[in-house]
Length: 186
Image 1 (tube, helix red, strand yellow):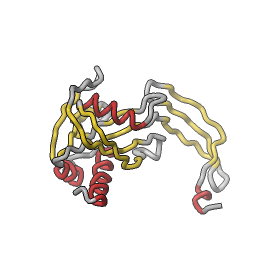
Image 2 (cartoon, one colour):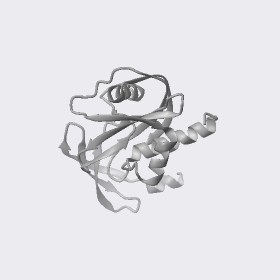
Image 3 (cartoon, helix red, strand yellow):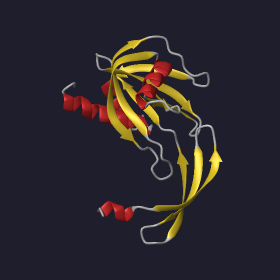
């Protein structure tokens, strides 16, 4: 038995509390490592893909979008949920095209990111898109987005300073910076 196995909780029972369009909420009874029981409420999420669209000159395309729960406009990288049966790289391609009108020839994985580990199983797959071209965008009818092209370093500084507060965007920018540095692309 590995040391981390001593931390695992075992599901005893599970009850679905809510079955929504995007989210499904569960209440599970679990057995703790010390043998006691507890309740874990959590959200099942289909997952998402997020893309840092990087132009040859070092610029990237950001989006600005109003997010209802915090009632605020955020700077973000293009992203969206994975549709049932869809591959995560297909989601990345679809969302980038819909939200920015960009298509790419190269997609580089930056790994995954778990934004809310205390209450959700959501995982966001992070990518860099390169060799990109502008075509016509077709945002979903319920999405209202402003695109903004800016230098990659400016976006990174906005994340460092707190002007960008979206977690997936911060994670993707930091990982993209690391990838660019380790591959000698910067």
